[in-house]
Image (cartoon, rainbow, N blue to C red; front, side, top):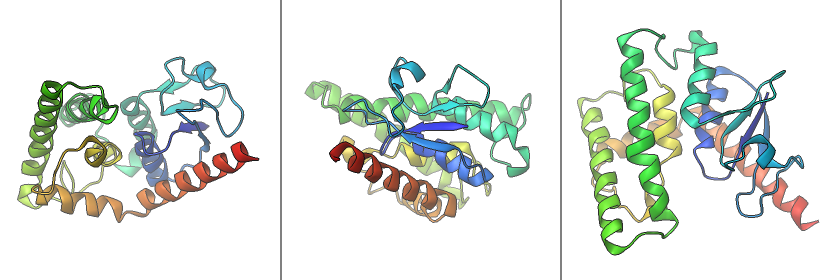
Length: 212
């Protein structure tokens, strides 16, 4: 399989989940500014909306897109890793609820702030939305649990970590101590460290090729 990624984006969640399972997809970096890829692929042919992650499975012409879809699919294919609850259970419904919350109340709220597209009123609105959402997570972690749903790392944890864009958005989360400790636990995981290392190496290779 081939996984298209971009630097410092939610594609890190897909990388981390693949690493947790022990998968080794071919990684392809997409330069979101120059629109080039490390393997010469025209990315618009992979995803016409031009965003990552995108997962091309062996034998399939159409790529899987959307972070929730890709991470959930990979986790479902490897239930032994316990990265997502089983379909049809209340636990799975609650996981889907949590993933949707992360996508709509966190990931999407960062984007207008990072791209400097907001009026002062919009900045205040989105900042407060993010503070509320992260506050919900911080409160959930207040009972001492290691991860959002308990002691097991899941796709939701990978997604929260991969969309922790508060510094780029100008949102101060220093007061959320439970969240900070939680992120530190995630970043200590070998699968997450590998995702960061692989991304950095691929981005550097891409830059070298563009400069040649």
